[in-house]
Length: 120
Image (cartoon, rainbow, N blue to C red; front, side, top):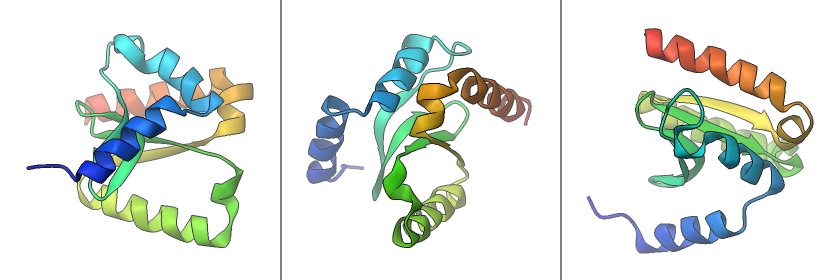
């Protein structure tokens, strides 16, 4: 299945222009540093690009900035999550400020989620 070339270009651009929270999270997830799991960043699951994806667990991690707090964004994110969950994926969301200020809490939550998914 051939991916939309525009999505590929956009995903590459997003990898180059990562937010501080995305950069920090990627530093902790890349190269199997977290639970020896392989994560991809700005991964295409058409028609979307997800922030982080672990194929082994079917796990999508989304990092949200303040723009995700608007009514339109909340509705869009809910539709997007519903679509991804219909594919059998688990979607978890963290606020950028939590990643930057409370990474230990985020990682503890993520660890619990990953352990549960491994057991299922």
